[in-house]
Length: 289
Image (cartoon, rainbow, N blue to C red; front, side, top):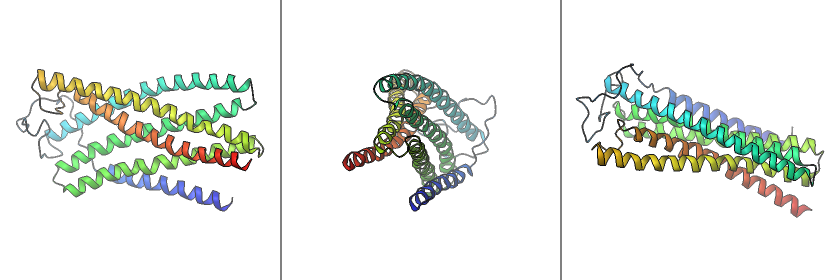
């Protein structure tokens, strides 16, 4: 192991450890358990100004259970939506992988290696998006608990910041680990031939970008549609307050926000630094001849 391998491994380890520690800090805040049957019945504590959950509540009380109910709905919706999204994305990725394999195999011997790197990049993007979405829903609910249970604004802000930082540390760490592992495997397969190694490695970034595109577009379109539906059906027709969780479209809007703005952004982060790294590698190899 040389100094570069040691530095890279240390960077990945620090990112993973920081992400785990920050995530554990967020999970220390408990979300009240939802009592079956409470649902979203109107409460005397709810007003048009404060919405369903109220401005302040006891985390063990009825409004706390309602927060938990909304949280479970959003968590279930994001998991279902992301499952459908990634199944569809995987179908597209596999079709593209087969196409790349036949195109490359007809002209070079790089087909299997390039397709393998492409699939690793796509799977990395999927994993990071899924983990990021989970952390987002966990931290969002706990930030609401913290903000409404008597904590200061600073405490609630720091909790939200730690949830975001957990994703921020985790995404690059996982991306660097898989990208460098792919580079090492390809280097072994090509037996030190630099040019075909660089060309195959570039497919890693393309795979990550493909999944990121699905996440950003699907999540963005979904959340904008839900937002429009929430405004039309809730505010104009039923005279419900803004973001009232009794409106199903508001739940769908929050689902879309998690999928598009969190899972999609995490996948974009992987794609951005992966493609930038691979581009520098390819340019360096081309310049060196």
